[in-house]
Length: 199
Image (cartoon, rainbow, N blue to C red):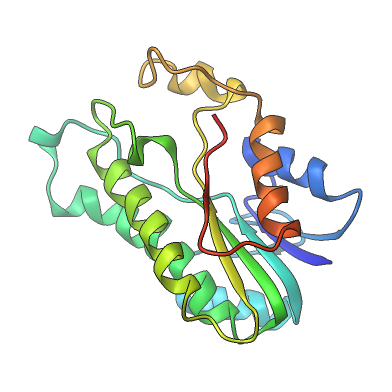
């Protein structure tokens, strides 16, 4: 399969790459590096990416920014970060990418554990992650041509604990390679409208 991997240079992206690359052709995409570049907040940039890459069999998105902060100090501008980037960025990958996807192609997005298990300072991330999970369930029943869409909702990964430990006290981190298995299930499996939860 020809798989577009967005966020290939990130911690999770590298693990997904290592899991899928032995069996598939990986097109590595980043904001500023990789085989191609994309800004998922910009629909013109997304369209350029697909025009450059051409037809594909699967897309995996392991990117998306959200704002972490105390709810008392947040306004619309802070919530807009995640809505514009992680949520609509991934939604637009499907809305535009379906034009370039081969029949039976799959889209796999990334949400996160705090849609189910909220944390302090994570209200925006909880909102965005839950919206992504809801979107894949709703979109799955309307996609034509055998197209599939799923989400992976991982917990925090071990390799990121140095940065995120203070947010995730009491959570059990997992290796990124273990989280990557859920992406393989989505890409190489047959299900659609699923939210995989590697914990």
